[in-house]
Length: 124
Ligand code: SF4
Image 1 (tube, rainbow, N blue to C red):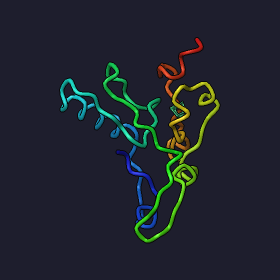
Image 2: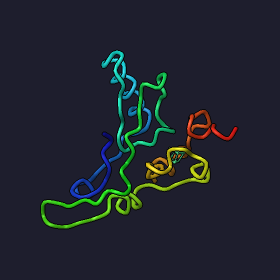
Image 3: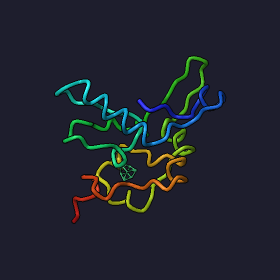
């Protein structure tokens, strides 16, 4: 599960991991679990290594209503709108219904959905 800068994390000097180390961590984890499938939360699948379909996208639960221990309630998708955004390619993506978009820190770094991502190739 990739951490997101919300709640306490946002107030504690949160720093995003760079995408390269995250991708390498996913590759190492997939290798460590052998033939099992890995499911990743909070990172859009269009920026993850495919690893022969062994890496699944858990979705970012944009429709989930969160009830916090201190009593506050919030829609997780609305919270994520502060941290992520869609790009034009997302309009064609099969994963959009469960995706919160690309992290704004990734967009600022020039990261875009991989054209080879299966979810963007259905209409080709
Ligand atoms: S909706 Fe956009 S950000 Fe999400 S997986 Fe698809 S292309 Fe990537």
